[in-house]
Length: 356
Image 1 (cartoon, one colour):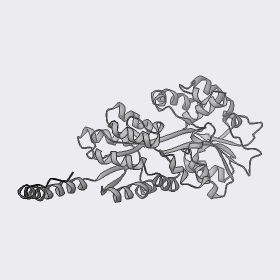
Image 2 (cartoon, rainbow, N blue to C red; image 1 turned 180 degrees about the vertical axis):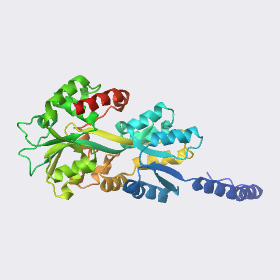
Image 3 (cartoon, rainbow, N blue to C red; image 1 turned 30 degrees about the vertical axis):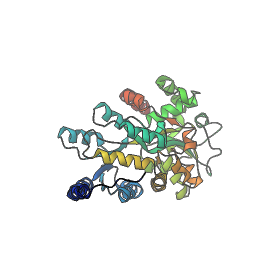
Image 4 (cartoon, rainbow, N blue to C red; image 1 turned 90 degrees about the horizontal axis):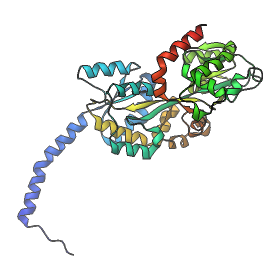
């Protein structure tokens, strides 16, 4: 069917309308692009890696300016202060999942819009998406062993507890009460899927067995590496990134993710964020660009939500990451709601137990 031509006067009217609307449309685009997307993250090399892997390519593709604000900790108090003053300046925050849960309870985070949540789940799976954010910067606590110094290296929590079959000086994280309880229960035969709620009494009873054989309770990541380098210990529970980093320092380290507690940050949007649309768009971009996730992983050693990112990495790199699918399959996702609700009581007991 041939097209019916507009009368000349009608065509001129449409052209005139478009001409008049063009400056307004351009002004609207200019105004939208002039509002930067402000991301609060951990600072230093961490912020640099976020900028390289995500912020810069996102800006190049979308035209949205991304400003990264270094806020190394204390997010909750800072966001509470901003909200109380009616001047929230952050659009997106990268923070620990337990801290995010506290902000949800305080009403300071936006739930994901239904369409955004659907897109994120489709891209990275429901296990990597919550009602308020998406998984980011995952890491695990692993059983690490200096193969050159140990008679035999334990590969499971039960083997780590078996000091006769696997002799050697040991270490655990002095502040890692939840990791210690999880490993203790696994060593005592509790199945991964039946861990939570944690049987605290049973866990401490099992910890009593190994406590005399823990020679160092490390308190910082640097210390956890130092004691391995100096062969002050030959095996222990340490963070995966610190453990794999020992290889570059000349230590013949072996890692086991069997029963490894996996923790993660979340990328979340404050309830009063000035530019939430751009923040949600960055979440979509992050979820659907696995090559960007691979750049991040290689820079920082922390995992990402999209499993396809790990396929972009050399196999030996992926094998050392708590967030890698093969390690997630044998690890333990910490129930942060339980940890948050029970933190004060169990931490007090843990502190007393360590001192006794």
